[in-house]
Image (cartoon, rainbow, N blue to C red; front, side):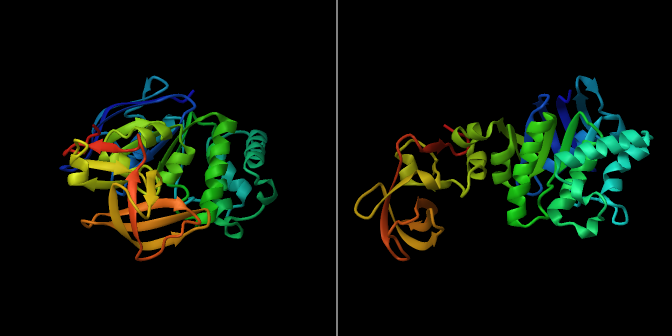
Length: 332
C-alpha cells in the first residue's frame, strides 16, 4: 500500500513562505506528476513528503499513518534523484545492493532482490560494470534499481531525466511508465516539462508559487483548464491568448485558442495576420503569426501547407474550441 495524504502542509524558509498550504490525496498505485515552472515549489513539496525537509505546519500521512515528523528512513519511501548519486568505485551490483547491505539483509536475499530488479530494468548484462562504463540512461536505471530493491510503499522521482539528451529522455519516459505498470506501486514524479507530465501521469498536480492551481488527469487539464495559468502551461506549443475587441465580443477579458484549433484561410476569417516564421517539421508546420494589432500566436497546420514568411492569412477558431477567461484569469 502507498497512499499519501497532505493536509494543509506549509513550508517556510525564515520569513519566506514557499508552500502556503497544500491539501492533496494520492491513491495507492497512482502515478502522480507535480509540474510547474522553476521555483514553483514542486521539488520542495516532494522533499517534504520524503522527510528531507521539515514541515512548518500541517500533516503528512502514508497509508493513514502520520509521518509528519518521522525520519526519512521510517517512511517506506524510495527517492530517485536527478544526479543518480551512484558510488563510482562500486559495481552496478553493489550500487543496487547498497541499501540492502545497510539494512543488514542476508547476502542471499540481497542477491535475489538485485537479480530481480536487474531483470526488470534490463541491467543483468551490466551488473559487474562500474557507473563510469555506462550511458546516462543506464546509470539512471541503476539508480531506479537501487530504489526498487527496497520494496517501498512509493517511489519519489525528482526531475530524473533532466540530465539526459532529448532522445534518451523519450526512451526513459517510456521505460518509467512501463515500470509503473509492472510494479503497480505509487509514484510521485517532479518535472518542469509538461510533455513528461502529459505522457506519464495518471494525475497531474499543477503548481504555481507553492499553490495547487489544478489537479486532474492529463486530458482533464488539457480540455478543461481551471484558469489561464493552467491553460497556458498544459499543451505544446502553448495555448494562444487574444485580448481586446475579439475577446470582448465573446464576453471575456481574454480568449484562448490552442495552436491546433485554428482554421486557416488565405481569403476570409475572424482574424487576420502576417506569417513571420514557418517551421516545417514534416507531418506538421508551425506558423508564427503576428495578428493585426500586434498579438503573436502559433498555428499548427498540416505539414504540406503552402504558407511562407510574409504571407497574409485569415484565422478562425474551431467551433467549441475557444476558452474564455475573466480579468483575474479564471475560466468562464
